[in-house]
Length: 495
Image 1: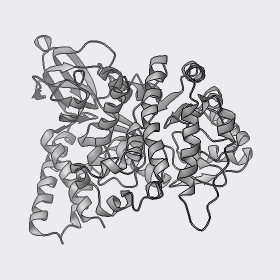
Image 2: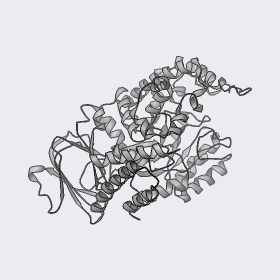
Image 3: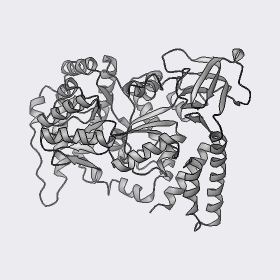
């Protein structure tokens, strides 16, 4: 089934729409289907002329270039005056514009594609790593994107999260209570088609190591949280390939690490969940007060030696720390979020937010600032990073928030080039596919973003998108706007 057929199927159920909504929907269908049909008739040839190429290899931008794309691959990159564009090619004059590799969000959770996929593509996000979800849906969508019957970012996915028997992970998760169960779960997920295994907080020490060992035998990466039974150094030395949300690095950098690791659990009585954030704040404040730079550097040494990737998801940390300020901002991106989801995001209803105490709010703001400093120190030490948002958290938006994450990394001390590499080249290295994508080079996959301004001068220019090329298929600015209008329409109609 083609992408056009998918759109047709979507719109056959729209007969109950008011006339103006029907007209808007039909306009979207006509524009998108015309674009897709033109591109699917034959392996097309695209030529972007007079463009500045920022190839993400670390080289200086190359001005006045012509980039030729045949099918889904880059077939030529030369100075415009030296290129003979193939006859019949579609030529896009990109004077004054900048071409970069497509962006990757390396930590997301999504449960539908109709609304989120247009948001990803319109924001130049051509690949995502889903770090926990319903396997049958994720693996089906992954296959449909690969075949081209679903227009969206490439999906790398693990299926359910692997936690201890007392599951604390939100969303689809499986609990394993012994090393044997851990090994069996790795084999099962590998057989089902998982691209990696994601571990979580409550795994026992011996079960964690059994999972790592079995995954190594089956050549499948292990990523995720650092279980409370494991230190960051142990996880890195064991071979966990990436640590999400900065794991327990601050805990491992404390002079009272042992005290923190044995901190008593709060006892909830009579439904008073506020004891949990109060306990978190007390423990966290103790952790921040005892941070030791020398101990932190020792942790960094292991992360660098083992090349343990970090996906800090700073945009999520900011959302949780500064939610009271965020809710007062009139954010136009909320129009892409159904009203029911917006209600669940509110501090009054969201479980992560509604039991906050004054101590917890103060601590969380302090923690966010410390984590910005920590990211800079880790980066300066040579720890490898990738961009990720933790989509599913309140006030984190599909596609849009990846640009926020990049801006926060610049705030933390990265150069714009380093941030762009964290969103393009580094995911390709992490996935072992740097020969296929991640940089703008001849022979590589043509999933690219055309920008109206130089992102090396201002990282916010990544939001000034003129067009997106997805595996050789070109989506103009107008088509991207139509995608966002469709996402907005879906958000309005969802209950």
